[in-house]
Structures are given as C-alpha cells and as structure tokens.
Image 1 (tube, rainbow, N blue to C red):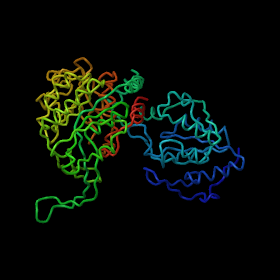
Image 2 (cartoon, rainbow, N blue to C red):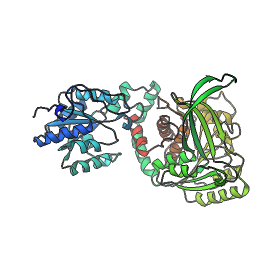
Image 3 (cartoon, helix red, strand yellow):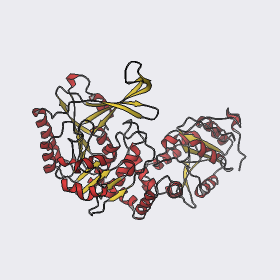
Length: 539
C-alpha cells in the first residue's frame, strides 16, 4: 500500500480550509482529505502516473454504520487509493427529512476514517462527475447493487458504462448490509408513534412490493385530465409597517414568480408516473390580452397532449398571492377570473371534445375548481360515460359553499379535504372517519373515498365501516399550495392502476409530502422521487 500523497502539491496546502458550494452551510475540513472535484482529478491523475490504483466509492452516507465501514475497507483492497464521494444535499432523493446530516458533516465523518484517502461532494444526482474526475481503476458498490434489474434509478448501468469508458471496472463488495434509511426510520426518525406503527405494519404487509407492481401497471393506462388551468402568481413583498395616512399595511415589492397550476399541475404530476396523459382545459381569450398560453405550454410535460378551449372575453384564471418571502407567509390574494358558465357554443364544443375522448381513456381525473368550466350537464356526461371517474371538488374563496362534492351523485373515486367534506355533509363537528364511512356515501355513491387533513394525514375508505387513517409524512412545509393537486393526481392514477384505497392514500401522502417542500409549482413531481420516497419510508 502506497503512502497517501498530500494535496498541497496540487494547489492546496494540507490544512487549508476548502469550501464546498452546496445546499448545506459552508464546509471546512482541515485534515487535507477534502478536495474539490477539480483538485481531485489532478491528485488522482498524479497518483495514477505513479502506478497507484484508484478505487472510488460513491453514495449518500447519511448515517455511517458498520455496513459502510466494511464496504469501504473491502473496496480499498482492490487498489491503493480510496476516494469516497457523497451526493450534495439538494440531490439526496430519499424522502422525508433527508439527508439527516448535511454534506459538511457527512464528509467530515468519512474524512476522519483512516483508510479513506480523499473525500469529495458531487453536485448532481449521480456519480458521473466523480467518475470523470477520479477515472477510477475500480468503482465499488455494495452487494445489494449487483442486481441491476432492481435498480429503479437506472444509475448503476449508466455509471458502469462511464467507468468502463474510462478504462475502469465496476466491482461489488461482500459483507454485512444495513440500510441507513432503515436505521434512521426505526431509531432516529421524526415520525410520531402512530406513524411508526403504521409504517411497521405496511412493511410487514409488503406494501413496497405492491407499489412497485402498481408503477408497472400505471404505465399501460391512458388518463384524461379535465379542469381549469390556473395561473399562480407569487408577488414577493417585505412589510414596511402601517401607512402614515391610511389604515393599511405598506409593503415593498421585491420580485415575483409565475407558475402554471390547476389542471396543468395535475396533468404534470400524473405524467410523472403515466406516459399516456391527455389534458382538456380552458384558457382566457387570447384577443383580450395575456392568456398565458405560451407559459402553460412551456411548463406542460412534453408527453402530455393538450386540447384547449378559450373563454370569450374572459381571462385565464389567475390567483395572485402577495408573499413575505422569508417564511413564505401569504399576506393576501387577488383573483382574476370570470367564473360564469361558458357561453353555450363553447360549452357545446367542450362537451363534444369530452365525449370524443372518454372512450379512448381508461380513467378520467377531474380537477373541479368551480370556476365555470364544469356544469351539471358536464357532470352527467362524466358520470354516464367515463370508464373510471375520479373527482376532486375544491372549495376556495371564489366558490365556497357553491362547489360541493355533492354535485356528483356517483364516482369511482372521490377526494376532498376536511373542510370540503364538512361543508358537503353540513356538519363541521363530524369525525372524519364517520364522514368517510357513513356521511359522504349518503351523498355520493363511490367505492373509494379519501378525505385529506393536512398534517393529520388522510382517511381512506376500505370497503368497511372503519376507514384507514394514513399519517402525513412531511414534517417541514415550505408551501402547501398545490399539495392537494399532487395528492389527488397520484392517488387517482394509482387507483386507476388497480390499487386499493388505502394504498392510493399512502401514495397520495407521499406526493403531498414532496409537494409541500416545493414553492408554488417551481417544479412538478417525478416518478423517481415518488419511488425513492416511498421506498425510504418502507425500509
């Protein structure tokens, strides 16, 4: 074994402080082992010219345990220099509250191990940048990665090709296997006792296997999304205090963001797990000013086929929220819309397009925002002709008390939040399990009913008088706007693929937990993060 070379000869003196740009705070490791990828490339090139063999290991290493230690010590036996790189915080896609430790602490721990020669942070989702920098003779993964058919990320095969293109070899270490996610879930998680009990039960019941099957089945389904497009504008302002001569609070304009939401968000979320999604929606009159069609098309998933109606003399529905950005506190909201029913000619065109598509799809997901698109005639068409009808009927400031789920007499799946459910059953004190099992079924005939309740999770019918309570999984909400749309789209797609209602509720909670970590609709869900989040919870 060759003695480790100090990185000072490559432009950084041993003991220098090195800062990594990451979502975590600035990192400083003073033992000379931490290197930027650029310096790491130079160091590895020099040691390779000296005849030394480079071994690279890459991962999250969120909670370093004996399995990691055995993996790393086994890996070093393949060569002379052991390089360990970790995924930057913002790319750790392992579910709730992960990583548990920021990059600076993960790297510091690894650098403290005597047999580790160098540590780096990769600011992208895969190990590709580390492989290109280190050009390892051996890229070592644990034995659990040897079955590439089980790799939901597809990264291992890609990384293998990169390693071989650089003249290296992918190798696997043997030894005891532990899961950091499992250890964190069982011993260090922030889940409440009820959540832990629920997840333990689902692990034992094999929920992870059922979900993997469902992801395969949904790929063969054809889904139609119906609903209004909503433009969500966030105007960021800083409160300045009470105006000197008026009884109002003055604010200072900072910046703004514009997002494509409503049915656009539902379609994008559904497209994350189903490649066959079509959208039927309404926008404002393009001759009456900005109707945001170009923004909508730019933000719509390329796989989604969109059919657009235009509301004559009316705008695309826009909701402008004035937001204090430090804590994402919403101060007030302004609606821009014409929520009257569409003119008869446009409504007839909508119904004609709707009928033409119902027979070509396996499921219809209706995002009923109550802004004029869906009338009683639309409901009759949907109930009579949709092969599988999933409805989310929303109450908001523009329609509260007027847009209730009771407008549908029957549906295959009904999803509302607690307030919407209480409004529909006209009992604000009703227990939610009773609402799901007894009160809502009196109004809407449906095999599958879910009522969501924010941090309290959701209640899902299971064909008995005892609905299943599924706890919420996200602990840190950045922004709740759009979380309901994400929940509904994913839960509905899962039911269309053959899931039972509690399983759909679980995946809906997964989608909602991811969504509350996203400001507005800066991005939409992806299949991989849904799979990884669910898998992390169930380890």
